[in-house]
Image 1 (cartoon, rainbow, N blue to C red):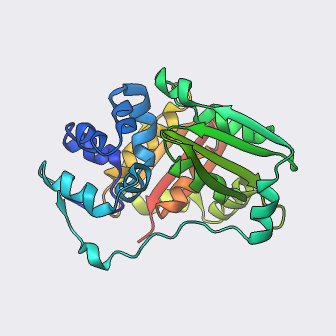
Image 2 (image 1 turned 180 degrees about the horizontal axis):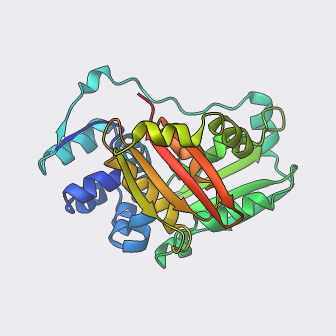
Length: 274
């Protein structure tokens, strides 16, 4: 199988289950993917380049290990630009270093028990006051979470105070804050749903996620779009507009249109921007 720096870990696992042990040799936290619940939720969110960063190694180290079990990397590693870490201003850094109002959430035991802490973290973020900072204690850097909360207007930085413990801090940037979910929703509503549905005609894959419990609808949709062919669309019966999914689709260059049937039924049409 040919892979690149943006290939998702879920795709690798689907092709070769030995991937868990390979990336686990870099960072033992990846062995948690043996848990089927965490595998469904975490693997679709992490790319090869993300995994290298989480594991604290150069991407070449990870690629070499993956090539050792039969994967073929399609790019020249020397041409891959270095991924820059988000910088925060000196004033903000100084402000955050002297935190007075901080909430702390330790998710290590949650992960160890095989439960995805994503919903707990998002709920805590929603309850966070504007003058508060959230500290998340984990055993690895939560790259997908940092990416998502950055899209919602949060500054963040990570500190490793001791071996095996990663502290990630999130604070709302008042100057950049917008309601990203509403902004994305409005932008995605501009095209006509029925018109695009007719455009794809027989090139449509259908799934119904209305009976699934959270976060399974999002997991199932992300799984389906991984193998969506060019010129095809994913048609989804959903209970609502999946707000948490919108920034993730935008990151992957997917378009999403929706049509609300009633308060408990929404149709989604998802397709790739080429």
